[in-house]
Structure formats: C-alpha cells, structure tokens
Image 1 (cartoon, protein in one colour):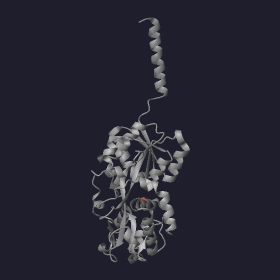
Image 2 (cartoon, protein in one colour):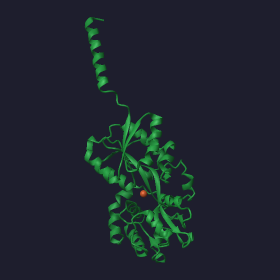
Image 3 (tube, protein in one colour):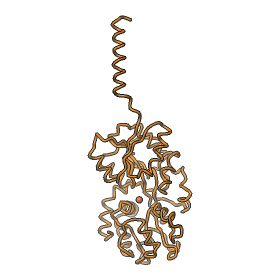
Image 4 (cartoon, protein in one colour):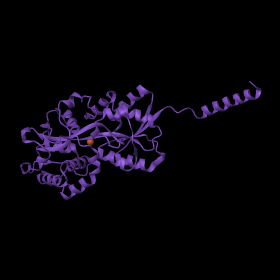
Length: 337
Ligand code: FE
C-alpha cells in the first residue's frame, strides 16, 4: 500500500470516528401521541421494548389537542403514531391528512376488516360495545330488544341518555344512519328524545347512576363504564343487555391507532402497531380498560366475558366518520341536546 493510500485510509478512519462520536447512531425509537392515558398504554410499551429493544416515548393529551398539535407541527412532528378512541376521531385524523396508509399482512390478519380503515390509515386495537344497561328491579330483560325499540312509547319517561355532544353518541347515530337510512334513524332518535326521563346527562357514569337510583329504567353506555361502577359497588341493581341480536348486532366502536403522515421511524412504528394487534399485547390493551380485544382470536378478560357474548354490528366503522356531520345535524333536528 502506498504512503498516500495509507494516509488516506487513516484520514478516513479518523473522520469517521469523529463523525460517529458527534452523531452516535440513534437507537430505534417510536414516538406516540396518545389520547389513552399513561396507565392504559405503558404496560404494552414496556412489553414491546422488552421484546424488540425499541424504545417508546409518549405524550398523552385529549384527542383534540393532539390533532391540533399534529396539524401545527406538520412535517416537523416528532410523532410516529397516534392512538385515540372512537373511529370518528381516527377518521377525522385521516381526513386531515395526519395519517399514512400501512400495508401489513399482520394487521390485516389480526384486525377484522370492519374495525379498520378501508384505506389502511387506522386500525382498531380494542372494541368498546355501546349497549343497553337497565335497572334490574324495574325492567325484565324480556322487555328489551333493540336500540330502535327504545323509541317506543312504552319507554316514556324511562330512558336516560348521555349528551349528543359526545362523539360516542354521534358515532352510534351515524352507524344507525348507515344501517337504516336517515329518515328511519331520525324517527328513532326523535322517539328517544320523547322518552327521556331527564335532560341528557354529562357522561356515561352519570347515566348509569341515574338508572341505579331509579330515576330512569334504561340507558345506553359503553360497557367499561358499567364495569367500573360494578367493581366499586357489585350490589347496584344494574345489568347489561345486548340489543339487536336478531338484526344488525350491537353497536361497537374502537380504540385504535395509525402511523403519522410524517413519521421518521415508520418501520419501527409499524412493528409497534403490529405488536399491539398481537396476542402478546391485545389483553394488555383491552383488559386495563375493560374493553374487548379487537383481535377475535383473543378472549376478553373473565370479568368482562361474564357479561355474556354478543353479535356485533359488522358495518365498517369508517361510516361513523363519514356520516358524523349528518348524525350531528339529525340529532339537532330531533331535539337531542
Ligand atoms: Fe370513554
């Protein structure tokens, strides 16, 4: 080797060493913006890091703030993944071009088609069932049948509902429009309003407390709120009823996630998303909030499974987003505040 070549080589090695010292190779890391609170997400991130060595950093906030932040940060966002509840919210993020499509065989096989975006921009990771809960001292389960039946005059002054401002109810009504058309959905919502025992309530827990106290007989809630209340006081006279089992099935929604449009760690982020859909994480994701795993191969927590199995509505949840504005207008016309 000539002296020139040797110097050249040494020089290159020196420059390379300095460069490596100044810019050490960044360990793989995924940054998550999450509308699910720390307590619900940390256990599965820890499990993911343990398995893959990939670190997960996260910021939690409400979905509105996280979407605004992703918008404002644009291409400079540090976020690789957005986690939030309700298909309506995930759809809105996709509409605002904050997410990017992910093509993954793992996700397609783990998550049923109706629980993920047809364009692959978001994926449901847990199921929340929005169902009927009734006062066991005032209602026989044989009196209950469907969401639509709660519009019947026999429920006059017996129904409690959460406010229509909550996306959960907007998604429920949007899915009813998808199932039956706007006119029939409006007839039903008007019937509900006519049957209200009290003004719409601020949250699902309050609605359940009203039913337990006998101020109304039946309400419509996500089952995990029922679970939380029953864990605190197992003697409450409340029970779950699964409606529409002879027709379209129980209205379900999701908590889910998508990869951000400007993710810089896309491969690692997809790995995390796939992990969250797998048997290793599905119970960690669902059980802490008393939800149902989105992956049908995974059984629900025994406490949740004890409420019984049910047929779920299998219409694609993208409809909850697409028909959200229509649903909000319809509820307004029906006088549902
Ligand atoms: Fe909730």
